[in-house]
Image 1: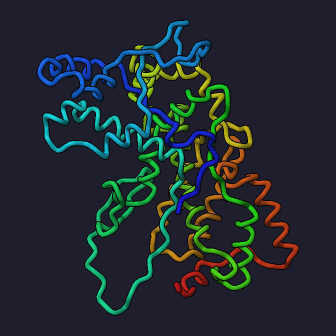
Image 2 (image 1 turned 90 degrees about the vertical axis):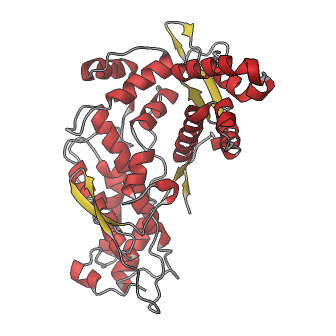
Image 3 (image 1 turned 60 degrees about the vertical axis):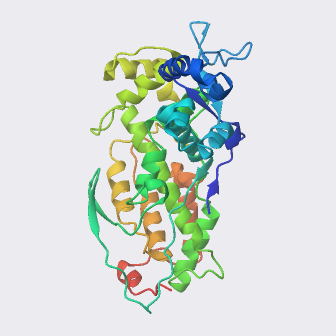
Amino acid sequence: MALIIEDSQKVTQRKIPVPKNAQKVFSALYNALEPNMGKNNLKNLKNLATDKTYNKKGDNSDKVNGKEQGVNYVNIDVAKKRKERWPNNPLQQMAQGGQLAYDLYDKGIKRARSQEKVQPVEPPKPTSNATEPPEVKVKQIEMPSGTISYNENRIIKEGLEGHPYYDYMEDYDAYYVLNEFFDNPQGKQNWGVLINPDMYAKALRELSRFGKLTNSTFPSKYVYQWMGIIMKNTAILVVNTELAGHTQHGFPIDDVVDIAENRFGISLEPTYDACSEWLEEQGLYDWMQMPDGSDAWTDFGLEPLWKVIEEYDESLPPEKVLVLVNRALDVYHQRGDMASIFIQGGSKALSRIAEEIKRDGKKIYITEKQLINLKHG
């Protein structure tokens, strides 16, 4: 189950920009194949090679110095059909645009889907004691704050494997954030679906009253969705911090240069100074805001968030996941209200929940020792 972001655009309405350099490749391939294969057999390739403007009359959003940009677009639904019907014959693949076209469709579809849905982490699956569990091979993956183990038996769809956080890092990268900005530069950064504070308060009351979450009164699936929200928005926060030059993990120069070239036809010098200055001129750093209006990057908030995320494992019961969510919401952020990118109302909502539960005479915390003794059923 996924949480749907409130968005006026549906996936089928989104479009994939065809980079100018790719159009040149498609055009050269079309010119080489057309004499022998004919125009009708190369229709898709010709569309990819077409150098045309996508600006509507009076629309200056995709103009540079008043000049329209000749960048072609492919509708997402068209890209999906072409990918589904991708031929096995190498010559026919070439007639469709080759691997470059396939990758263009694949990447564009994934980005559109990532903008449309927030995938929660999966809850633990029931296990049977009838048979011995399979042997588990453990690998180590480098994480920003250390290493984290994952099982080879847990392979995510589309070839992604490892800790669920890597899925979010893959989908919500610098390219995603920059495209979100240039799609709506006059607005503010959209953090998508956030944790419902009333549901969160209900979960805390449930845990403090019974020592566990019972599906009869509180669907535990929401706790895993909340963890998904925390991972997704942490991944975005990491990108923001990199774009703001406030991390040692590197500035995404290649992504900025690529966006400038493919979207605006601008050749930026591939240096931090040139890229950051251009982004500042475009207004990115004013656009990157948390819901409370503060700067949406952090100097000290990433490490504690990573530590919380690293402790998540799909075998954890919902009670322990709820404790991790609670710890993530408590991470301190000097620039503003960090909790506001995870829960509606941010720290004010958390303070209200704490006061309400205090008036009820119930404790909202449970010790780790108690959690160890909780039943996993």
